[in-house]
Image (tube, rainbow, N blue to C red; front, side, top):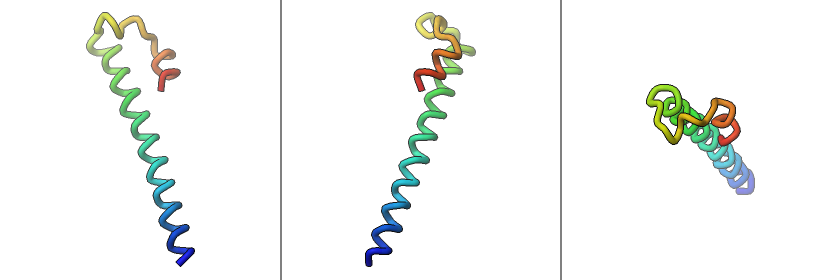
Length: 55
């Protein structure tokens, strides 16, 4: 019983970690493509270092 609870808990903690990591990857890629490909005025002033620090 206790082992099942601990296994589920560790699974959900790991799943949450994956979600956080992939959310950061998607967010940084979105900002990178905005800054480099679309050259929007409000995003153009952001450098790649600023994008890395935001995420």
